[in-house]
Length: 405
Image (cartoon, rainbow, N blue to C red; front, side, top):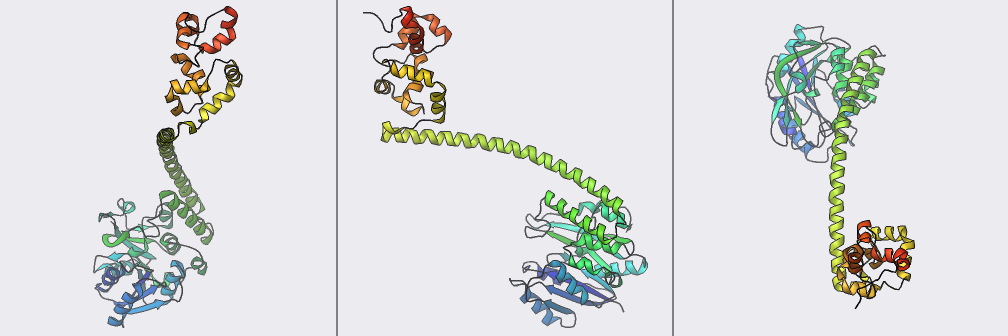
């Protein structure tokens, strides 16, 4: 009777590990089961759960622990080194199997196809957040049961470790350098595929759990594509560049997809930034107005000058100086007549120059803007501040500053 070794790798997965172990122990078939569980120094209750299962199944379960966290790659390596079976299957600690005949079916497939280096089954993706599930998208269009290294380079249709079974003899031939790199299931499977075709069983027999703590599922598309690029570069070196042409084609496709995603993301982000900027300005302006209103209510003399007022004061420095030196502009009188000026953000003289004069506001008791505009339509038509017009032209032309009599 052949032995199947099942490797369970885990770290801080106390919420998932029970279901994972139970799904492995329920396997049935004409084989002897060996379960090697590698706990990578979990700090939650994962280890205690494993120990309870080991106590109940001492002839089946081997537990490998470590005094410190060493990462997924080294954890997997230690577990593989402890396997004594003819075949090795992997079930990651947050995944689980749903078919009690999974191991037996995969063993029978490899026995019937001795040239295959490994095999995998169809997987169900389970979204932990909302409870939805569906077949792995990359597997929905698979039409054959044998795949090459080139096929796997073009698309990681396998999906994860938990649906795979390997020949132990193939794992023992993998380069030691592989385990010195940061790798995931895709790179591992690519290396195995060099020793023979990959077999596919279309039955859905395992579940890949997608949750917020998942190493892969928490990455966005750009991060995932960067990780794929790194895996392809590593495999290109490990395979002595024998698949460089296919790797280059795959990289170009990923670049195109990433560029499309980035462009769409950029368009969305720029639109969002525009809306955010508009809302921020609205909030700022409203807040500023409210602050000015409160300050005016408490102390009308302490209203500050706005940036616009400062800008125009610098821009029209000569004209402002002319108005202030004319003797016609009285700031105290102007504010007393038109108290709303205090809330405008403009200094009184700038307000009169840009707004008040055209609205008929009088700069002081000796100049009546409304009279000047009504008496001299050419000034109103030319859109010139009445006092400025008078000082530049009206004095010389003999025009009057207020009603006579």
